[in-house]
Length: 246
Image (cartoon, rainbow, N blue to C red):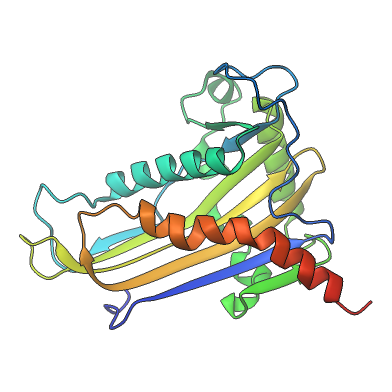
């Protein structure tokens, strides 16, 4: 378990691939459609389910505490789906569930199908030492990972796949019966473009909070620091590319 944070801080790292990168692809569909079921020409984006890599508490919290391994997995599943859907209003966004009939038919066990070790996050993000890295291509992604991402998208008829990994939470309550304390949480994520068979981007996010109400949802913090960052990255990335020496 990491040491309890003595001060609050946020670390974000991004690796973007290709000079036409917009962070999110241009998803050109008819925004006037309101049906829940996507039409045949709607772009479909799947959200891989969240499994926590680590969850631990410095003191055992009482039973009414919001934070738990299952609670955090549910929170991140919901947050990623709703956030991506709000960022891409013209795209049909859906969470992939392990009990999906197509997955069962293909005997795909989602929890072990794409292990964290398949993605080389530390290598791609250069040891988490830089906030933004440009890579000409995604050659660091192993071929076996590409094949599995493509296979999964093909089975589920997905154009894009958002994959959260390395999701972890460490809780430091002041007392077992108090909900005030410190918190560390982190996750990595990537966007797979199945239409072009490539990774669009890879990111890593970590927040250390020295004191907060542990019963308050993390959604507003992520909206402010992660989701808003995504919205800003497109213009910043184009500025970066335009200034890059040829």
